[in-house]
Image (cartoon, rainbow, N blue to C red):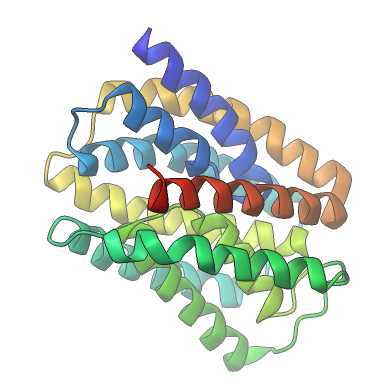
Length: 252
């Protein structure tokens, strides 16, 4: 029964992640609730061992339909890998408690900004090209990589927001780029967690199959309905993240 709960959660998480990120909102609470006595790092590592497959599948699907700026996204993915390794190492050494308290406030600011700017992310108008785009994308990848390895909730949504706000992408292109970076950050975190024995591989494999199935549905919905749909999904996911992280930080 425990496996059934987290496998179903992984299915839904894959769908949400493929559209706009934020699948950890579904899967991580399910893991922590189902295995309350497990070491947190083990649950984080097992979560990533499953979600990386769904994110990889979504990246492949998006890349076939959306033109990605590979020249900027590949360095960003490399920076994300390095940042995630550092963040995953840090979480084995120190507690992310302070970050847990600040997260709901950051998410509220992002939600309000997105709601206020009704045209945000509706048109694909990259602000920079060449080295400036590479540098900006790499800084985003590095910063969010550290965050993903260290804590993680909402990483995909943060990536989408920053690619829209900073680089000028629409929500569909931003979601595609975010997937590529997120794969890299997940791989780095998995490598670190696995090296310390913090992954349940059998459970992770079962969850991965469900995650890919959810990712198929989510990427189909995003590609079929375009940037406007992804923007609406982003608002819903960020609102849910605000409620969940706020409850965890101040009421639980």
